[in-house]
Image (cartoon, rainbow, N blue to C red):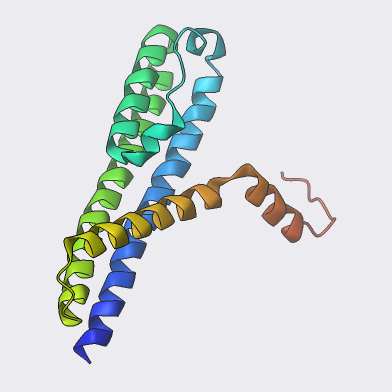
Amino acid sequence: MSKSIAVISLIGDWLLFSFPLYQGLMELKEFKALLEEFKQVSKRWSPISPWWWLIPPLKVHKERTRGNNILREAADTKRERRQVVNFLDKATAWYFVALAGWLKMIASLYELLEQYEVESVWILVGLVSILTAGGIFNAHYRIDSRRVVKKETELDSGIERVEE
């Protein structure tokens, strides 16, 4: 019974890592769309490499710094600045929730390995790497524009309503 609970706990903690990361990516995607409105200014600041996703908190920090630099130059009104701060705060909050889930996932995996009397640190590191990569893949897959277009097409009934 305790082994089953340990497995369920690990699954739950992986979900608490993966889906807040997904939510943070959605917020960051909206933020990038906002930055596109400031395209001329954003061209002066080089994009952040996707390789930084190997260390998600550092990627978020680098994106945030880049975004702040762009917005410092481009946001003219108080409303624009407030909108930007709101996006940044939401994305940052979701990433910290994802980080907490990731740390809890590691603890749950350790407890599960203890249940099976596996004491190899290399197995722990390997499984953490696999679960982390799976969580990052899950989040990126869900925000991928090809997936979104496919889902929109599946939901398209062919009838467009006019919104009033």
